[in-house]
Image (cartoon, rainbow, N blue to C red; front, side):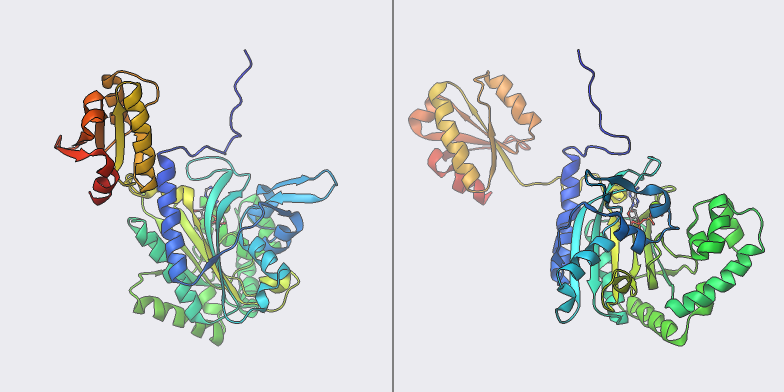
Length: 416
Ligand code: ATP
Ligand code: MG
């Protein structure tokens, strides 16, 4: 016998009933996006490698070691998208969406790919809910985007979590900070190999290092807050003021830089309690320079990504499990089965979930199927029911029965 083929390491199947929980999260997100004026954009999963190399930054973990990159048959270098923002911007510029007036508000849902070491909360195919607001540098937009994120997380009943915020300043603030940070890092021994390289090429990246030892060294490092120009400081202060006004609790986290090079000004992350080492369920920030980096006009923007896989680990078990009432029709004999099939379709036309068994099994077997399907109501159809045109509708939770005229069954159930 041939061996079974398995899924690729780090990639997994998401099965029912788990998928109901995912749908609940995605529905909640879509509803929040609607209220905040966002519209969906759907993008290819594959892009030119250059798009990510140019935007995310060559010294980042993502570009230096995590991308699924391959040559296509023509020899072009393509990459399975490791994140969505660069692709959203590519699409916006390519389709001229940036020319529309006002803030362009877009969201997208779907899988991302990173060649990481698979472990709890870290997969090679994972899923994100992405939000991008393009065309404004107003701190109100930053606040609005963070409020929207917190609203989605609240809607899905995320438990205890912390919102961490920082400002990375503009390129001028960053240049002054990088010089100071680099000087500090040069004076320290014992940084990991990656960081010894990065302290020269891109010192900000050292702040995002996962090594416990590097984190320890960084405790005495200079912080961005001390290097913000007056404009950036005022922008950040306004964002924080608005978060407070709307009752959002945040923690300033002066070393938060996030894993991508393109962030400017506001950066944020939500960490959930109870997730262990991989505890960031969402992250985001401003990327004012990215459009120009990709050959476009000046287009200040901000966005976030929710990591769905990690979020699922901490959401309530029963999220989205209540999917409305379900009816099971048990039928005995050929004519009753035939009648039941008509009734089944009539119920479904009314939007009522209905099931029956087509295999002509015993009543006992049919009732145990009704149990397994978690039917809320059952109806048994036999010769007597066909003759009288009436049957007992049984409520499984209580055992209560009521007699109903078969032709009125869809109406009666719709009203229950
Ligand atoms: P981390 O620091 O945990 O590696 P990141 O900074 O690489 O996260 P982002 O690129 O900002 O993460 O992506 C946003 C969110 O996507 C993360 O907060 C996380 O919830 C999720 N995420 C990122 N990488 C993975 C992965 N390999 N598997 C599952 N979820 C992931
Ligand atoms: Mg990462």
